[in-house]
Amino acid sequence: MSGAFAGSRALGSHALGLRALGVGILYNEAVSTLLKAEPGMVDFLSIMPDLFWTDHGTGAEKNRFVELDSWTEFLDWAVGRMPVVAHSIGLSLGSAAFDDDDYVEQLADWHRRYGFLWHSDHLSFAQVRSASGHEQHAGMAVPLPYDFEVLDMVAGRIRALRPKLPSPFLIENAVTYLRFADEDMSEPEFLNALVRQSGCFILLDLHNLHTNARNHGFDALDFLRRLDLAAVMEVHIAGGGEIAGMYTDSHSGACPEPVWALLEEVLPRAPNLKGVTFEFHDSYFPVFGAAGVHAELARAKSIWSRHRGP
Amino acid sequence: MSLESFQRALCDLVASPDLCLAVREDSGAALAAYTLTARERERLAAVVWQRGMSTNCTLYRSNRITPVYTLLPFTCRALGGQFQPLIEAFWRARVFGDGQFLSEVDRFGMFLRRRIAEGGVASPFAGELLAFELARNELAFLPRKAALERVAALPAPDPAAPCALHPLARAVAFSHDPVALLDAAAAGALPPALPERAALVVLSVVTGALTVLQIPEPARLACRLTAEGGALWPLASLAPDLARAGLLVAAAAGGTAPGICGESMLEFTNFRAP
Ligand SMILES: [Fe+2]
Image (cartoon, rainbow over all chains, first blue to last red; front, side, top):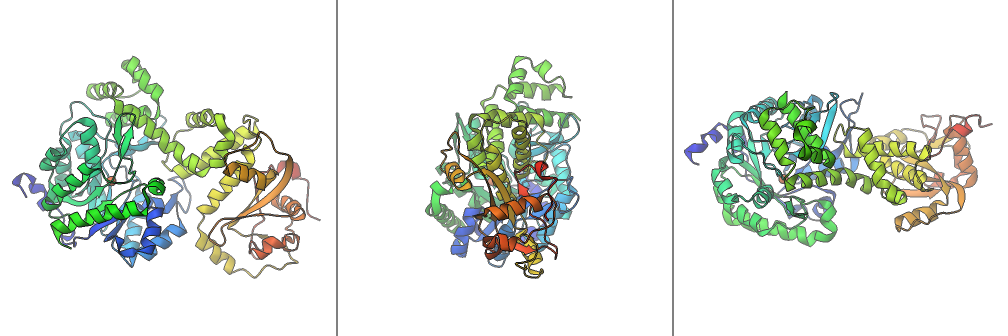
């Protein structure tokens, strides 16, 4: 670890004591069938807790979060068989005007129930306040400009969140189709500073990095050289495709070659990396197929074992 | 305040290609409603020219439309060319507040129901297909375990006594042959018209998978009467299929009258079961 990245020494020691897991998969309904048939196909499972319940919103008088029985039955089955980590989509940590204590409490409750080894969410925002003062959702994850003002705000929100969740907290680098001019920092500088100021770890999504590098014409390897890889606890890998001249992070199936090359690059240089998660969207499963999923997992496992041992 | 306003402007741009064009045209005027620093204003005026902004607008629309297509496929087929203007009218009428795509589908369903009642939808099948799909979706997301535990605590339904529909079942009224209509919708080949015929189907997820049962005429009439609040009828004897399928529960012990989805109750308010 280079001296420039001294910030990662401040990372929680309990988190660094977690054992390295290997290769996991992000849960969807197609994954459920595959895992039931072969629980040993992955070393761990990542789940989006938000998909396991219907959220009736902050205005709901009671039973705001109604859990989906068939999904929680699967989770009950899985927790006894494999380590599970949580990857939420609702914290909207980049929002300048948003807080949802009940949602955080629901996540904390699920941590107590399922013992997630770590928790991650995204470096972006989705929730704003409309002109009339009501909640407004962006309909997608919107990226942030890498400015000091944004850094202070997000770091403050993560510092406030961390004591409420009983596990290490990871922030995922965003995919962005826009470029903001005149930013205070580069993305790796922003992420390194966020780690220092908030005590979070990084979920490094290599397909997001590849997508940004390809669309905006920068060198992903240079990004990795400038990122504090000691803060990376989880890596995401995925596939994507072109929409009207832009390469998008659609999670449509096999990882492209540059993502595998980035994984080869990161694995030997990320000493605190605990797991590599393959993500795909289940709407592509009919085309991608079980064989496609197994092939990606096998390739990720062989890269993992080459660098980390079996 | 200005970061908050900048984020709201970005959300508004992602949701509205028209606003993007207006900012291209005259950023000062189009962004006048937002409290922005000079740097934020310049950034917004620049991003509307980037190809990535149209990618964002496309993703936004696809994120919002996909759940509707997925959860209301038959209704979308029935609406045909009217779907696009209707969903856009819905988006204009209501801020996307909570990011809950499933509730959004329900809200679009309610919006559509009003439009159908006002005569603003051309398809003669949209109302019943919408009622069918909303009922199916509701059942798919109900807490099944708790409902089954509630029913297990009830006494067995008495065939001669009033009983109610299982909490994991819904009755949906059709005004065309349900089999012909649902088959045509599933095949993506809805005819311009079908003979009118009142019918009632019961959807259920009691066994875990969705089952759909058409119930006979006397039971249909009984359901219509009980649904509007009258006494509960001995449905088990009127509709033995429902009883055999385990879709009836003892009413006296806490079951509820079967509501009927998709049928106006107003014309039956003077009826009471004898
Ligand atoms: Fe990811």
